[in-house]
Image: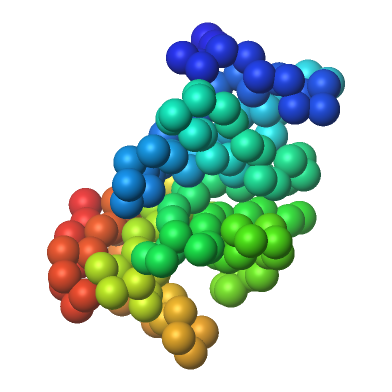
Length: 169
């Protein structure tokens, strides 16, 4: 089904769906994952919906697999999951120039990104198979990554409760 925003042409690519991810602080923009159909293939791009004029800006438009976008605390960057080949990365896009930097890369499927209230850490799930995933924390200041659950269960949907406490399923 078409999104509530309709079909928006982007260089002959139609946006056929959207998953709202997160509003900005002022509530006038949403960072979204766009489902893009191009020559019968589906891609996931990252975009911003301006709620004032209901326009969509496709920020990536690169036919790669990109999901789970979220704003940085200062709203100058976006963080999201990027897949290139068999590798999954947590990527950072600087909005002023759309420069993309891969902050962490692995071969396991990464999903469920959540930013700490202080904006210094990202917690995420890493899926090993259909029944096992673990939670990890990426420190944005120094780039270190730490596994915080064993992967014995399907640990998903992590969110920061405080800067040092998390909730998850």
